Length: 168
Image 1 (cartoon, rainbow, N blue to C red):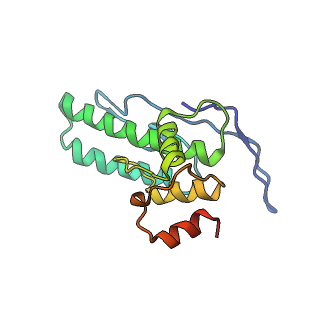
Image 2 (spheres, helix red, strand yellow):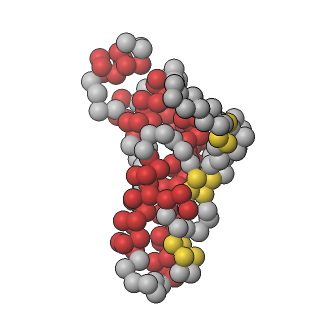
């Protein structure tokens, strides 16, 4: 789970809202017995870009795909939990970087960031709701530059790649 001490304050011309404490984390088992958790019941994570809703809808599709019967086998439930856990961890990675939370980074984010920092490569991660281009854009917009540029990792010409990393 991520640190939960972050506070957001919202103001608008018409209304004032009280500060909201942002909490992030996920359940370890999205499927337990006959209980199926989807959306906010499975993962608490606000990114303010619509991703939590997309993840909730994907969870419903995953449930229909893997749990077609009310009495699903242990294997089907385990696969649902495995895939849901991956998706939720990846969404928490995105929330971690979006909010700039302090504290220990999630392990999956640390691995992803190390790949970018070394060679400008964002690996494809099964079930990741964020495409590699989103991660590349975020890191580059944050001013980060990799130690080495791996031309095979990019589908760009050498000139275009040099311009992107030069900040043009």
